[in-house]
Length: 518
Ligand code: HEM
Image (tube, rainbow, N blue to C red; front, side, top):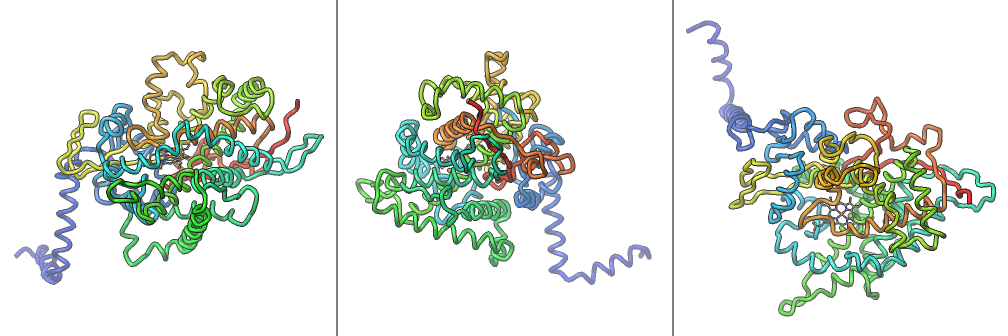
């Protein structure tokens, strides 16, 4: 025998059978994933062919949306991001997946992020989803929002007044305010008032203010679990996220106490949940279902709106011409702050609507890729590609919102792109609108979009009517902005930074307010 071959063979013969089999299995898996897997032909990150570990890493780091965006820059509009997931960065793909593929189920991974049992956000079966939408939907229609508006306005006024604590006739600039905290207090008060019939009062008292950090930590942990459910094994997640788990327990205690208080009242979303009945089987939702829905709504309805409000304020404080135009519009349309409400005057505020749309484009609160599963027996064709059963598909919302094909100069905040009179030509606007999906599209689109839009309109109009605001000229003033040394996707100082943990988390901006000159 050849002398050179003799050594390796002797080494091989000493490898225990079990280890040999493992090596063979790994080799077989690698070859299958690279050459024979139904998604093998799609380009994408190398590690993603074999494991979701890369996605899990970016999920916990909070830059999953940026990594997906970067992969599209590198590999093109269609990428295999994890072994079974293809992501499309096209408007036609978005429609195929979320609108035409309306019977597609949410991916089973959603099961990991439910708070207890399944809920409207996480349920996968279309039938179960339709049942729950029928119960919860009426609480979030535009008509329901009109009824809720007086209460919402009282929170807007409390929020506005909290930002400039004293009434100073000299109009000096107030103290720096960390808006990521204040916007979260405001949004949590609003959603708890709507869901439980009583606001948690974070704006008025420090007692439960830690809830906003509890929710943020909870989302971070869940975003890891969504891509690495095996972290559950041996409850490794409890060891990795000690503080976050403690915060989650505190959040559950708070929801329980709000539910107990709400039990004696009616006219809130919770009462819709508890009173829903089937004529044959009795209560439609179990107590555990009701709990899960309420706990989810309070998170989905506060975190998303607060990050959008923070981003809007950041862009207005960063783009002076947008600020000036908006201030002119709001201050000339509404004669007094008490006139700020939905209706004909609000409809005249086209620049305000454009600023909100542009904020949700450049900094979408759900920035990652809400993905859907092709079930056995289903066929899905996306952009002419047949997606086999067992695979998942989606579109990265941040990525498509930053695709220059649909949004020229995507890294700039340009409210004018949404205004036909600014030369954005209707044809162009049609294409732009078709690729716009901050609330997703189709049957699983956001149920809270009317609330979110009303909240943003009222809060922004009230702040801009009453105050001037600015980012202070200190290190704190840079909070929330990108910076050239911050790594891929985070270098733009004019872009508000999102930390994608299913719902985007935020840091800043820090702003100073003063009463505006009259
Ligand atoms: C600017 C604010 C908001 C944005 C950008 C936003 C965005 C989204 C997106 C993209 C989805 C689809 C997620 C997926 O498919 O996995 C979604 C779903 C959902 N959102 Fe929102 N959301 C906002 C505000 C709200 C509010 C205020 C609520 C009120 C409770 C809410 C409750 C929900 C619920 C329950 C779902 C699940 C709907 C379903 O699957 O049928 N969201 N949201």
